[in-house]
Length: 65
Image (cartoon, rainbow, N blue to C red; front, side, top):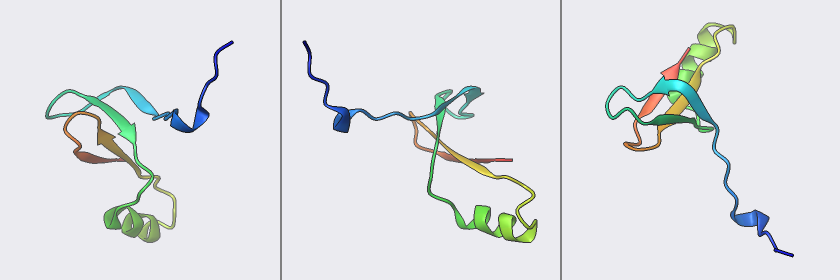
């Protein structure tokens, strides 16, 4: 019987169908919010949901509405 170390398992949510404009890599979600995302949420009173993603290959950041 095998022993699985669950502390070393990392799961990243990747978005299927949306790729990076520069390198064509997959986008994964980021939990850290940018200042622009916080300002847009305050101005629109939370009606616009901004999601932040990062490319797995080139590490560029994208804000999606």
